[in-house]
Length: 295
Image (cartoon, rainbow, N blue to C red):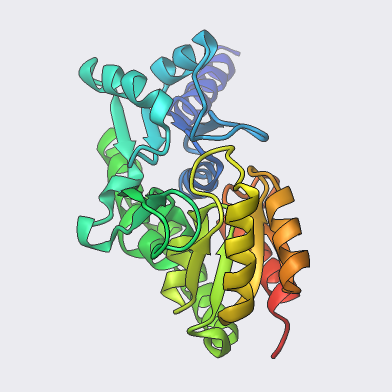
């Protein structure tokens, strides 16, 4: 009987240690990636949930508590989570492992995000780094996923090989998607896409598609004059589609698409309710196909 009890306690200890590692990801794409890398060897939670915009998310006391309890925090950085920056800096000062996954991308591969509306030759713009690097499958494979594996291995060296193997599987599927997407999007190379927010700039740029933002700020809408400029632009340029985003107002895009007689749809940069990061990319590609067609 004592042997049975001792064996049972040992099993409980092993099970407890297997889920002792806690990881918190700020946005859903990193949550999905980390979850599939760690499997059952860590407890992964999502900080910024459905309906919340990471650009303006401000943590509650309960959020800060959860971040403090995590062994690893995976954020994007690059000023995406602007209202979280001081909290993340404080965690780092306390010795908490905080990975700014987006900042694993070399500066030479980062693009600028314009603050302003409409055409660059008629309006003044200010510039900052576009933080939406997770929407480029190659940046994920080459830089972001390896950085996540390295951070996980630092805090859990015994599982390093396991994390690496799972990451390779994810990267392999991403590369397959990249080839599949390239075969379809190649016919649209040089075409112009108008978007409500430049989240998909890295994605479209990867496939040679030019992106023209309608809105650059968070929650702003263009004026009637700016919409008129964009309608004229859409009619004169090789515009192949116009997209809103789930976290942005759809109204300007719907008006513009109707006035310019161009197909429109909606993209989701955060992949809420998607099964995994591959499903996230595939869902957005299918939305693009609905707008672009098979021309």
